[in-house]
Amino acid sequence: MEIASAFRVMPSDDEEKPGACAVFPYDRDLVRRFREAFPRARWRAAEQHWFVPGTTAVQRLDVWVAQELQNLDRHADEKGRDAFAFEPLESPYLTIADDLRVRTPYSRTIVEALRSIPWAAWDPEERIWRVPFRSYEDLKARWEDIEEAARRNEPAARQKRREEQKAHVSEPSGRVQAERRRRRYPVPGDDLPPLGFPVSTDRWGIVVFEDIEGEPIQDAEVADLYPHMRTDQSGYVWARWRMPTLHEVYRTRPSRAEDDPELRAVRGWWWASREELRERARKLREVERMQRARYEARKASADV
Image (cartoon, rainbow, N blue to C red):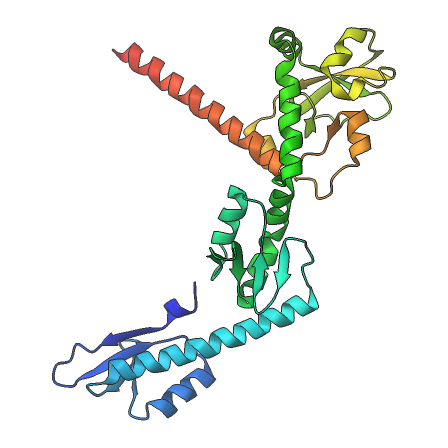
């Protein structure tokens, strides 16, 4: 709950005794300052509010509340600066001035994360997100997701994914589909993936490996379907895979560190990142919705 919503000023319903009612969080110093500003105020226990008499009570209370909120915001900003000094965030996407300024490539994930942070606001002139220091802890809690989405949406990273997608599209689709139906994937015999856990692959995205065949792969023609086999085809064995369930994806912890690119290029599998897990979960939810819609349609036609 925002601090401002805890302060309320309401006109009194008592026509014979004009005044206003005030509600605010209990704090000894806050109550002391209130009593000093309104010495005629009285606490009404039955209604759980303060009553301030006078025809101008509403206006005077509004001025007092605005001043208190300004002081509370200043105190919260000071606490946020102290927290930042003790445990700072260091990132090329974050600059520090009189507030915290976030500049990243566009990402829906980033926009949703920053919109959920209290007092964060988009500056259209500077084209940055501005976050006051009072919201530093909220920003820090979401920063890992923000920074990962920013790296993924850098122009160079987006271009690389487009090129990889073009490479896959240019391959004979019938052959790729036939290979997919076999549910097999070449993995290094000396660096096997874990069984029963969702991991990422070059060709099929996130899958769950269920079995490893011990014999080395003899079919050299499959190497052009798997980028990680194109430089060296020796030492690979077949791993049998299936699609993960939505529950498996949800309970999988994302990788916090990126694997060595050279290791990925040879191994062909790696621990999935948060973005990869989210994308697989989104596609699995779409499949579930389509299956549910087909089931409802068949059920409706059967009832007719």
